[in-house]
Image (cartoon, rainbow, N blue to C red; front, side, top):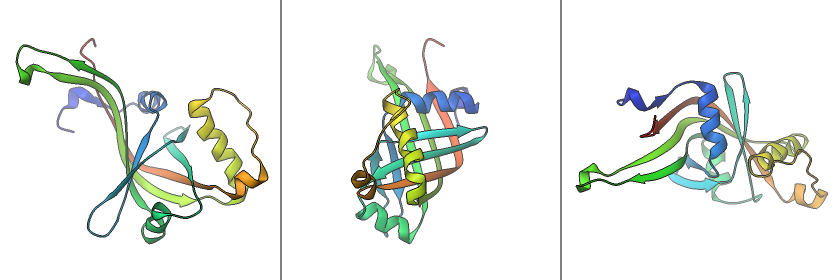
Length: 158
């Protein structure tokens, strides 16, 4: 990273940033250009390991691309605050972000409920959730096993 003073390398701090975010953008390989899609997510952090969970329809472009190549990039950002200045080049933006890459896979039916609970806990702080059998059949759940991750922030007050 060029701006080392903005780097966040502590895994606990990276996870704190992730938990502030509400969208994770996933970049899939798609022939000539990347295919980027914003998704709701859940995150599981176990030591140095981080896994993201996503859900969606049982068919569609992201699943087609995943079958062709499970390697993806991801990005999350939050804590945006415009800092104004005298001149245009004096303006900047406070932010926190996390980027990385990994391998994404489709989870089996036996893993769906645990993954969906992790996803739900990103948005609703309840600890128990119920899912109908019909809903579970109608959803595909994805797991992104993170291989590389880095954080970055600009906070003018720190």
